[in-house]
Amino acid sequence: AQSVSQHNHHVILSEAASLELGCNYSYGGTVNLFWYVQYPGQHLQLLLKYFSGDPLVKGIKGFEAEFIKSKFSFNLRKPSVQWSDTAEYFCAVNVKAAGNKLTFGGGTRVLVKP
Amino acid sequence: EPEVTQTPSHQVTQMGQEVILRCVPISNHLYFYWYRQILGQKVEFLVSFYNNEISEKSEIFDDQFSVERPDGSNFTLKIRSTKLEDSAMYFCASKGSGANVLTFGAGSRLTVL
Image (cartoon, rainbow over the protein chains, first blue to last red):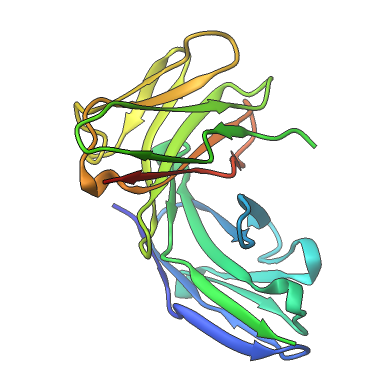
């Protein structure tokens, strides 16, 4: 069965700092990759997704992620964070051959200090 | 923008009681899901539902759990006899045909005492 690992459980940084959240998955076949964000008290929202094509994906709110197939990674980045980026971030994988079920990573809680 | 709505937002129940969590998926979506997140743990897949039947379920989804689409709009998760370890945030999600992106609801927090 596939699994998803997020390396950092908590990240604390100051406004304008750069952010990179790691995500690795274990599955050798074709996958769809996602980053979801959950702001305090809100629902999971899609930040960006990768299905195929350009491995550098741009999402909403200035986020981007890079799919590196050889490393089974899909790291999320933002060059300059804002206080409003305080949230929990979830990486998720959908194995194309296994239906529509999403497998989530453990989440990374990001706190941006003003 | 269309939303998945869930009720209640928070429910407190006694162990052994039945609980029904309700979800209204996006109206033209055909695939429905329940996930749960125990505090401090991963978001876990419970069940997927399509064409009025379960298409996949996890090992968590035992005989205590059931899902139903009683009418054209609601999608419910029933826990027959709640246990302490059922305390979690339960997320409903839906997906349209041809799309690979799930839209999640805000979640229903279940606390079992």
